[in-house]
Length: 388
Ligand code: NDP
Ligand code: MG
Image (cartoon, rainbow, N blue to C red; front, side, top):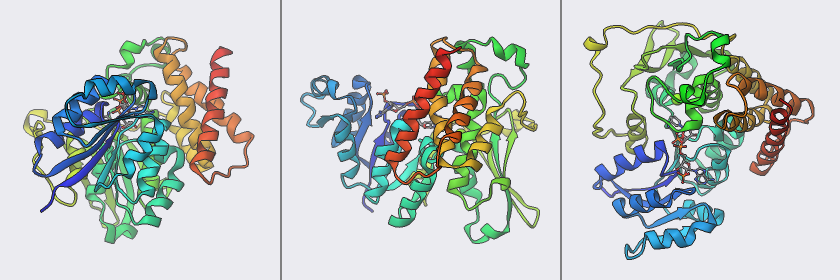
């Protein structure tokens, strides 16, 4: 059989590096078309050489010469700038891995779908900000959309399509993050260093902070709502500190099907890359006898107001969800720069979503419309932060 041709958006990030690990271990299965990053020229060039990519693309146009220098003599093309990123997803390939962080991934990921590519989606902000548009595009082109996010990969793996009408509920598990047991008083004064210490997963900084506020789980409810044929009240969150069970589907006959695995993104990534087959992945195997016990608890909406905030935004519609993400991106960056406190993150997001929802007609019919909402919400969030 011929090799699968893969393009990776966000190759130099946490998900991107895990993806490159799978690709480089399985050269007989995969060949790499394009690798895309934002500013990390050295890592991008090293990756491109390692997997012999056709082209490496750096989104920052000012880094074109640096990338050319880093790739000199390799025979690999060096491209730069946003137009080059959009061109890269149009190169023929079998699957695009969408692993850019944030709303920055909207345009290139959407362009991949428009070009009819199968998409392995990690960049959940695409579905949070523009789920209706992305899913309409998936249906229009008949493209395959596979979830990389571990909870959604878990649900996908135990979701019986033929029994979708027999599903009672879907459960997304959450580790609870580093402040699972912290009081609100304690959370008010946590530092970026404390918030960046995730108990189970090693991830990029934005999603690590979102896990600490549990905004990430709120985003994941919205993501699941778009990915699977479910109503909002069929989506449950369960705190499970060991991160062994990633997701579950409960059927009307009383069966609760779960997917388990080590907290290593290479498993869900490989599931997408090899789907519908499976390939060998060298992750640590679960030693359940050693783990001995799994525990569960209900999420606390009082200490983690991001959870109800995300649900309300989801029910309100695309202006609210795009604002939710945009405000969160700005607020998380401000927290990491020590300009606001930890609890200011959900407070800022709540204020921005409310202000955006009050002044909008609610209609969003293109990615440009979404980016306009995104820009306005960012401006409101910067204002809120300045007024602290
Ligand atoms: P990282 O911050 O580690 O990596 C982000 C990647 O996106 C980098 O390659 C970065 O390039 C690139 N990038 C950023 N902006 C742009 C841009 N404008 N154009 C092109 N590339 C850009 O993030 P993660 O890997 O942690 O997360 C990626 C996505 O996957 C997020 O949406 C996250 O929510 C989701 N996800 C991540 C998980 C994880 O385990 N990390 C788990 C589940 C979902 P550069 O390095 O050059 O800056
Ligand atoms: Mg997840």
